[in-house]
Image (cartoon, rainbow, N blue to C red; front, top):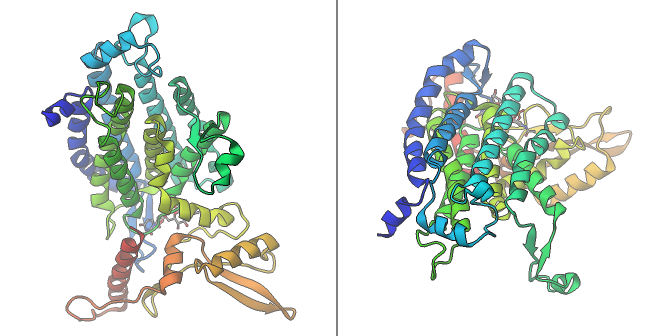
Length: 447
Ligand code: UD1
Ligand code: MG
């Protein structure tokens, strides 16, 4: 009965139906388009394989198009019937005006979820603008100082809809250290516009954070899928068919917000599964910046418009660490090479942390040195010094990413023989094979 009750929650069946076709559809669309991408010049070398074959890139574009079309197909099923609400919600809307605007009560149409529809459309708008930014980045390689603030503006429609839905701006003051609550004089404080700024920063962060934890096969899609599935599990906890009735822990609005987030996330996870089949180790396609920005924006929309933006950050802990570690390079305090992924050493056939060099023209400033020495004390990076005019100056640092930090912490990933203990003939074949094994090892460390 409980399962039947859950399936009858309005909107859930179309979401499940779209999710079930998403993996196969994405798989076939990627298969059909990948060669055309390569022909048009969208291709890249696999940096960790030690060979020079080009692999089709930017296959995040067809994936995001499949996703957006699936999202468009959802609209008539959920919102096209006019009176698509459950009887409980209609009854509730009629007696309760203060429902956070979620059901919408304009023009007497209390049973039509106006606000939910505008949340849905504003999400689609933000997602599409991120796809566009990602594709432009794939084509033109935009500079960091330009692309950093773009998602900030692209997320404004989402913020306005959040505000219109009476989105909360309060946070609970932590109980420890104890003086905090005494000092602020409250258990819960309202941040108002500061909270809105926080939301904009969250979506900017999630859009960029997936792109900078990249470069080993499957890691971009893998992390997006893991975060997506975790958020779906969190949403499912709130799908109570008895929501709003006595004895239920969830109100109808709370349930519907999580249902909304599921409607964005489940088809997204389906698309990721289809894409991962091509992008997983050994990669046959690369996803490009298009996928990274698209994925970040879907996760941000689901979290912010599902009204759990603080919880969202809990699922981004590895990305948060990677982002914090990267800040000195992103803001130009430390040189940032084009690629920061670990290096393959074909002589010793192992994966090493890659480095950023300080030169005479570009020496390390005082602030950079202080930050780098703190990171070095935490064993996150390795510094090298050289003599210059009888002075010790900073020569290089390993790049500031968690992929390199793992290699600094545990040493270069050793190479392995294949299962039979046989070493294959031919230098390149041998190198490629062995390097692939250590790339896979690194993947498991990240996940
Ligand atoms: C970001 C990172 C960069 C990293 C790159 C790898 C920052 C500031 N930038 O740059 O350090 O090197 O992503 O994606 O952190 N590639 C692989 N294997 C993969 C995926 C990608 O070798 O599994 C290579 C391919 O050559 C591909 C290229 O990475 O062509 C794509 O790089 P791109 O996404 O354009 O780099 P950025 O996002 O600018
Ligand atoms: Mg990228």
